[in-house]
Length: 234
Image 1 (spheres, rainbow, N blue to C red):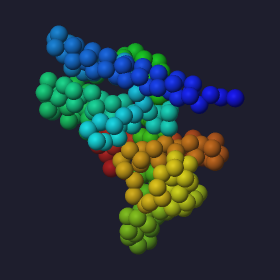
Image 2 (cartoon, rainbow, N blue to C red):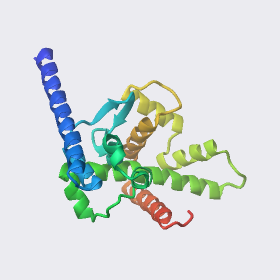
Image 3 (cartoon, one colour):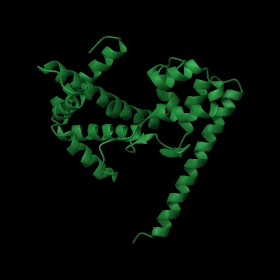
Image 4 (cartoon, rainbow, N blue to C red):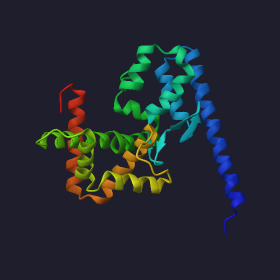
């Protein structure tokens, strides 16, 4: 029989260790910048050292590891950049946090080394489970729009797109997600909850769809992302 007190103590120890790791990461970042290291390399090192999956910071929930699997590295970058915001050129900060354009270009291998193997695998989960899933929904909205004889309201376009991708009503999917996560039953989601919902949808789609459809949907989403990055219309 499990001892609740023992489990609580173990949880407290893990939390304390995570907080200590976070403090080391922040100090490492500040020391790196102070000693003349570029802010971006110092930031990546701090990200690698960071331990907590989420935290409350300045009265706001910061979730870094979505579903315990998908690493939102830019959300953590936003949090850590706040520690050295006076040391970062404003245009470089905006380019990183809003457009995912770092001041230094790294190869995929260099980025993987900077994050470390575990965080890099979790980053790939975020890439496919959140960013590409978002692109899939948007690509489906474009398809619905083009196929419509008469213009639709944006909400109706979204409804049809979700049915097209997930073979279920958006309200039903949202209810299932909120029930599983023990969130209040409401139509609106915070930005963080929307990312969680998107990753939940990704796992739902993989679980309920045939492999050819999964491959086709992924290809569709990647094509849209390529078009966007190339500056072309959908």
